[in-house]
Length: 443
Ligand code: TRP
Image 1 (tube, protein in one colour):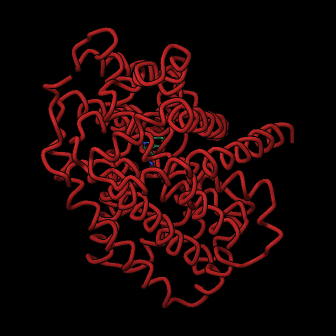
Image 2: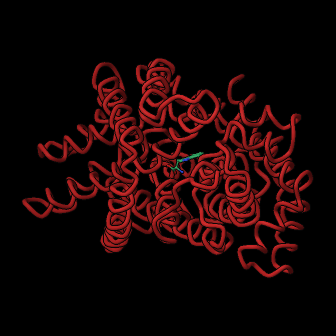
């Protein structure tokens, strides 16, 4: 354990963690969940859950990784003893399950990048309405899935963490700036107001609407990416002295900002381009029915080409840096548990993930189902992780944080939050999410 490699710089860990958080969840996921209604109540609940549930949980996850120095599969066992071992398996199942359709979504983004490069993004409404079905089915979708998975596997196998760090370092700020630029541009267009009214419109009855609550929980967990050991796997290499709470705050703030700003691009565009009927009652295709068409329309000529190529290129980079954190869960576990070499662990994992993901690549309806099951399991896993850290190993939690320089009082209040706010809040969320999932299947 002592001679494990460490993150090159304090910034390296933050970049990798922010790279894991910022991804398709912020763009595709936010557009998908917000399009199902809830308006300002959805946004408020989402922010609230990020702050009181996901942030403390992210800190707990980082502590488990750093203090045990073990891969996600074994860390719960090392930290809390035998009865926590099943949590390690849950980490594995959920990360593989999420990655199985995450790479399909990456395929949609990659295909869109190719369309942008060849200058054939949908220019009119008729083309826009056919666009999402055309990229999300058949051989186009399969090709996107397999290529994205192979690319993710290649990066993880080569262990080119330094390269990814560098890519994240300039890619993320650039994506951020582009989103702000696009948000400003959309705000100057006629009808943008209607989009804001949809996204932020206030109806307090929605605060207790099960569908809105369930969507807010799913969005918060998926976007921050905590609960299944992805960040745990990164924290193994974290310096003893790194101030974990501050780093977690930075990651969560950036991630939430990207989600909200992306929403301020997508929803005004729906109104500006008159795509309301495409997005309808809420659709997985919201982002891909809107942004490609919107960017194709935003400015023509060379500037328009450059904007759309850069934008979808950056989205794809953001997706890769998220996917590698998911793949790191099974890979580091296979290395740690069975003693496989990294490349073997990677190729075995991606072969399995490719097979599991094929039905999602061929059928969007199936992808939606897997997404809803995996989100419920993600929240379940987060719940058990909160119980482990808050109730079974509170001393390890306090010791790890105070050794790294966090004042005792702050560490204690974090533990209190984890025990008395985070845990009950996830319990409530979990009941609502499971109920909603079952209801949506029955109707
Ligand atoms: N947060 C990423 C996104 O928004 C996806 C992701 C990466 C994730 N690691 C995770 C989701 C761990 C759940 C759990 O795209």
